[in-house]
Image 1: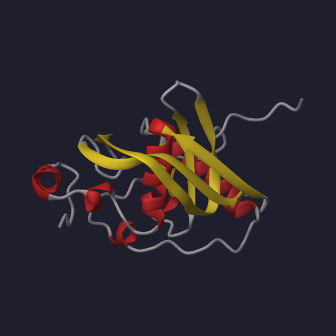
Image 2: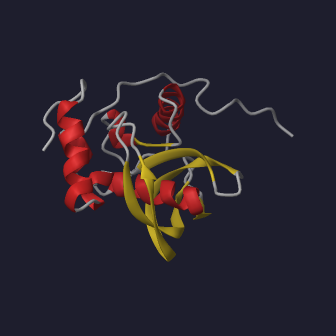
Amino acid sequence: MRNRPIPGSTGRVRAMRMLGDPVLHAPAEPVTDFGPELAALVEDLFATMYANRGVGLAANQIGVPLRVFVYDCPDDEDVRHLGHLVNARLTEADGITLRGPEGCLSLPGIEAGTERFDRAAVEGLTADGEPVRVDGSGFFARCLQHECDHLEGLVYPDRLTGWRRSRALRAARRAPWSAAVP
């Protein structure tokens, strides 16, 4: 067994983009170059996610408009899921719909009850270009759906309606990090 470095240990922490930044509201572009720059991006994503105490992070959240995300997220049975996906696509989202608290590193300190399916599957590639499929349930399924939304230019308040949406956006406008919140 090879000794592998801890994900993010060679990465650098990058600045987070906040709600209202145009890069968060546009679909990310597919990755075409699977070289050392992509490997460095994955490392930076892990380093940034851990520094901000997150469970998932998409590349556009650090201003890189590519279809890449990382995760280190437990499921409802407290099983740890650790990895990354390149050119990720949500291929299945089903089961029961649950409304649960959801937050985002691009909206720090704000949570809202958001509906998500309790099962999800995502297909994509590794940073080496190898095909991969990741299946999740419970909280991990929520994470996979959340990160795939980022790749499509969505943030979780886009899934909210009524008073939940109004409350989340009002809190974001009042937040010290607020920029051009809608």
